[in-house]
Amino acid sequence: MDLLPALPSGATLGWLLTAALAGGLARGFSGFGAALIFVPLASIGLGTRQAAPLMLLLEMLAVALLTPAAWRIADRREVGWLALGAAAGTPLGAAVLALADPLALRWGVALAILGLLGLLVTGWRFRGLPSRPVTLGFGLAGGVLGGVAMVSGPPVMAYLLGREGTARQLRADFALYLAAGAVFAGIAYAAAGLLDLALVAPVLVAAPVYWLGILGGTRIFGLASERAFRLACFWMIALAALLSLPAWDGMLR
Image (cartoon, rainbow, N blue to C red; front, side):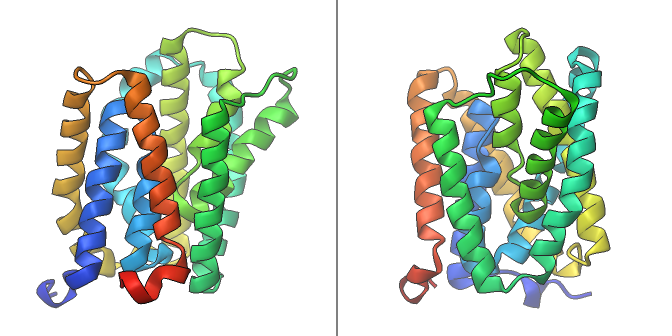
């Protein structure tokens, strides 16, 4: 198959590279925010139906590298219940991604990301008594959002932050959950026909820039305070979601 005709170009290429670099910077510095930035920006040129599976493919190497250490440290029983909820929710989200009107999908994803940003900014966390239905519910919510746009993190992080445990274990729990979510998303996207050869060229273009962003974000970690860069991530997420609103298509595409 000749990939050259399928290579992104023009404004589509510009938004894809911007999304990959900004998402990688956030991922490398703080370990969060990559999909919240990448998916809306890449959707401007590619549409959400391609941007979400592309985010999954870009994250596969990071998941493979981080999961072994997380498996040793994480509370696997707790993560297992969250993952069970995600297993049920991810196919629902993938069905929305595959079947929804593309324009309505872009509006929905942008507004959902702005809502999730509000959750992150306020620092809200679950303070109630944990129970299996509650754990499953948070996993289900994360799974649906992960299926739609690979943004499963905020609901589950809000739940985990309310639990007892060290920061090291929290990070491991979250990493293990994201790994499980990536597996479920891969299965659901494949079943829905969302993983196809049309993604090959965008992956080849975006992957080097994404990993360059991760490297840059890792190096910035020692130069800026965590608070300063988290605020920068919040602003990048907000800007990405606002720019991705279809209302601006006449100017941005």
